[in-house]
Length: 307
Figure (cartoon, rainbow, N blue to C red):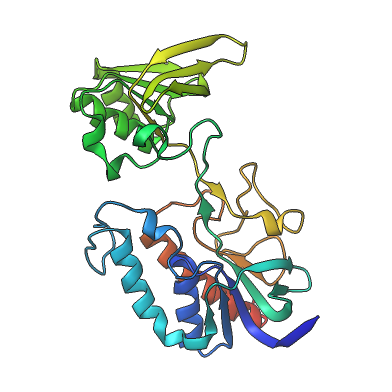
């Protein structure tokens, strides 16, 4: 096993939080190294198809434009930012990571691995000629006036259901829980919309059709099945924290997100976490930017023996 010299801080993940943390660590002159599995920094920014207007630094046409800006800021990191270099093993207690057969030790670690989109086994994105989608924003015109099933009960799912209903679609809003989990004001709008049928306690079983989607089959826990005619399926379910490498080494919540205190310290000494991978994270770019900087402050305090 090859080994590199010990760094002040190693950051796992170069999404918004990871890059923000790295820039702050670089600015305060810590010996910093960032590992990112993807070929580009920015994490899930590229998955945002709409304009980004809630970042005080400017307005961006979409997530890809924001990613370009983030990469421009990250250029100052130079070789400290290692793209297409996935971490394959970690030991949080000993504070090392393995990358490409090399073990890198750090005085402090920051976990900023973000989340990944869940895909339902029965609903491949783009199936049936694009009638199945996880991003309504990318093709809203395809579903205008058609019967559509929306899977999910949170803000994203209910807002999509309202948009479809207002465009003339009859919508079945399907979710496993007994009640919608979206904001109260959105739930009230859903209840007032006659084109939306709220189907609580159901989940997707299978899809039927030829070249295009024709039917969605739902099921309940008691085994009851419900076939629904539909020309479109929109899936908006919760994302999954990327914490597979860390399981059993620190405290996670029941979703698998990393539990931290107000300073983003985890249950493992010398290990911080930031961004969407954190329990109860607010999934916004601005929040991730702030948490990245806060994690850097906690790293500095830890290295100075103040935490």
